Amino acid sequence: MKLLQHLIAVALSLPVALMSPNVAAARQWTNDDPYYARRVTHFATLPPITRGDIVFLGNSLTDGAEFAELFNNRHIKNRGIVGDIIQGLIDRLDPIIDGQPKKLFILSGVNDISHDVDGDSIGRVMEKLIVRVKQRSPRTQIYLQSMLPINNDFKRYKRLEGKEQVVLDGNRALEQVAHRQGVTWVNLFPLFADDEGKLRRDLTNDGLHLMGEGYVIWRDAIKQYVK
Amino acid sequence: MKLLQHLIAVALSLPVALMSPNVAAARQWTNDDPYYARRVTHFATLPPITRGDIVFLGNSLTDGAEFAELFNNRHIKNRGIVGDIIQGLIDRLDPIIDGQPKKLFILSGVNDISHDVDGDSIGRVMEKLIVRVKQRSPRTQIYLQSMLPINNDFKRYKRLEGKEQVVLDGNRALEQVAHRQGVTWVNLFPLFADDEGKLRRDLTNDGLHLMGEGYVIWRDAIKQYVK
Image (cartoon, rainbow over all chains, first blue to last red; front, side, top):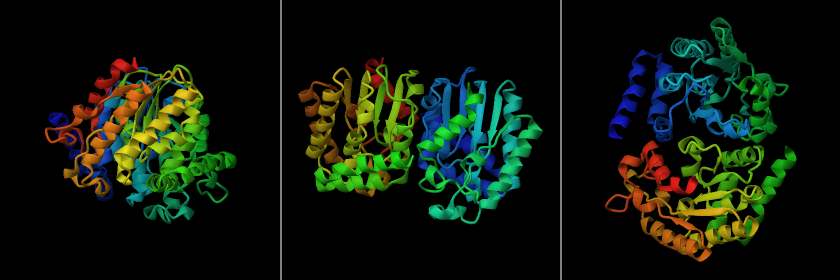
């Protein structure tokens, strides 16, 4: 167990030197978060990912849901962690792609934005992630999902205030990455946005995360890809 | 959706009038927590519990794990919510027992203690829960698990400081409830305690929650009951 913790600590800290300052600072935040560390060690002690698996990789939006139940599909594995950023997904990618999963659904980016990462940088880091999956697990079907809209009327996330445009910029960058890398682009944004481009009030209670009905919309949007 | 939210709000608030002051205050805390509300609506929009299901009901210790993966058993349904108390479990029991699940694993109580509920009260509320399950879903096999030890050396949970004895008292009360109600008592406490009765340092990073290896110990302790 000590060795495992050590290896995880090394794996999590090494790439920081190669990152942009904002991404590195955000990565430090996830490293220091006790929940994050627990979740990483939990994933490391679960049965390994296998070729039939459908992996949902992401942040709190993924972490908060029971996807295997939602889709009634036991092949779905939840690999979401509250607060994660795209570089965090990269750093914990190896045990996932080692299993050569059938499908990989990615949703991430809004925590990067809360750490002042801009839209273009989000695209760059996400492209690095996708290139790595394609190289190491070429038969995995990759589904890159857009960030959802945010709604700052709830005034719960100070670090997201005034950053609606960065979400739009980031989504444009992510869409370009999807097209350039030949992976499926899933534009969830319009399904969750109101007339002003804000996360619909009936689907959230904090302007960032989803109530149950929001997960139903997400499910219906991607069920054609999951099965 | 509005109706659903309304019904949940009513269901969550009604029983407060009948509770002891500490339990009522704690219940108000869960009602006011946005994550709690989201998780309740998520459960309400998942496919219903059915007769073959094995439900894990509890707080953050349950919420933080992927039990279906851990046990490689697709019948397991996670019904944990961060911060929940035993009265919270009672208030969200109906959709679970309506499905007449095969087995129900319960682990709860430490959040009650953080809200200054004493050991005997923990036993009383838990007995109310178990009686209700037995009445409404008589064929469900109930597994009542002890609270785990805590470790205040981490100094992360001020409301648990000096309450090691309440955990012991609560566990004694829970064990009596299990025997009185004829349900299986699962004493997890000694598996996670060091020589001083504290949660083992190698199994936690905050003195309350479990690292991956802790979930492996939990799994091995109850796998005979799960299958």
